[in-house]
Image 1 (cartoon, rainbow, N blue to C red):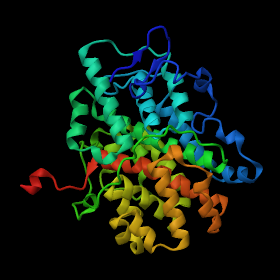
Image 2 (image 1 turned 180 degrees about the vertical axis):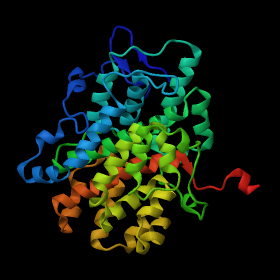
Image 3 (image 1 turned 45 degrees about the vertical axis):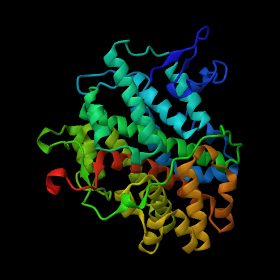
Length: 387
């Protein structure tokens, strides 16, 4: 789906907005210049009682801001191995933002994308943009739609292995950003604006979690003998993290984003290791159909119930667990509808502001990790092994 202009209007409309009239989605140029490009100005609205909570998460917030600058810089130079242009990246970010329905994010990425020159009008460029846009929308909305065939189509339109890794990191990052912003919005009790009528994707089926082989990468990982100094540094940053075998070596195709992602995981490692935070991450993995992330996050007592489905888990959960499951499920499925009302059960169950924020972070981060591990790897046996 191409970008298009409406006659008599200088605004660009992304392909997912193409059914709107020219006056239905105005651009906000000031949204491109906001200072904090991760939280998009929400941090400045925090009340005194929540400011201390935000200060305690400063390392994770700084890591998130660094990742934004890395994945979506002001200027970008491409190369033979890193061919994604700034237009490609911002177009992808806007696609993911529109899938999540977070208007603040849509305004920001639309404003940044608007002044950039689009790709040339050749058939190859159109096919490439169409493919990456469609893939980004599917992975952002329903990760189980992505399989090895979908991944191979990215190679068919000319994306290199480093491009593909960067592309997935970007989709994951904006998915994480959207849910963090939605959580912040709820903590501030700001009004929720969403367009009614959309159908939510179904949760992943139990068959996604059938006993399978260990996770394996779907792209050739970086070999040690060819690894650069920055890639080795990023891999060292990953050592304390519980990651599937070979995943870090695969993600090292983009050493800088790997370093930033690992820094964020390390910053959140201690706070998201509680039973409640792990339950929130397991709920997200169950909905998104990520067996490897589910296996790392789920506590044994809730495993069988969650495998049956979210409703089954709720029927067996304690009051605190129910509050966590409800919150994580809503933020995962429909961040644009997430509001202060969804936090009320947590507060009634005795969760502090700090713990509520931790649960939101754990859910948001899981949305990134689920997409990364599901799309770039598989727990299905290798075809050669099956034969």
